[in-house]
Image (cartoon, rainbow, N blue to C red; front, side):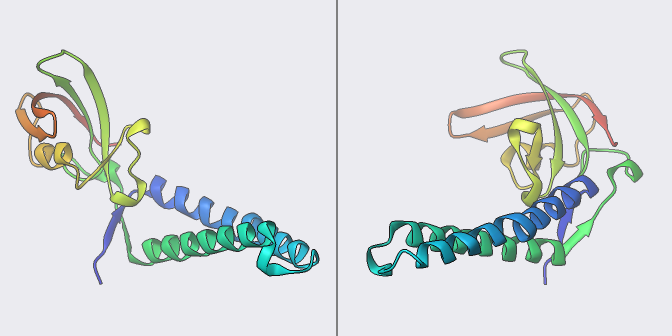
Length: 156
C-alpha cells in the first residue's frame, strides 16, 4: 500500500472534515431522507432523490478521507532542512513578470493553490524539488515555458 505524505496541518484539516461529515452531515441527511419518505411515492419525490444523492456524496467523501488517513505518512516540515522537498515553504519570483509567490509543497490530499499549498505532483513542485536558493527552474505549462528563481526556502 502506497504511503501518502501529509503534514500535521493537513492531517488535522482532514480529521476536522471527517468529524463534521460523520457528526453533522450524515445525521442531517438521514433525517432528510426520513422526512422525504413520509411524503409518499418515492418515484416522483425530488427531495428524496436529492437527499439520497447527497448521502452518496458524503459517504464517498468519508471513505476517501478514511483511506487517505489510513495511508498517511505524517511528516513534520520543521524537522527538515536543505534543498526543496516535501513540506518546504518556497518563495519564487517569476523571471518574466517579477511576480513573487510563496508556496508550501504538500501532498495531493491537502493541496489548495488559493491557500498557497502546492501539490507535490504539480509541474512547478516537481521542477523545484532538489533545488536550492538562487537556482532558476523552467516549468512547462500549457501556456508555454515559465522561468522561476528560488528566493527563499523555509521549513516550518
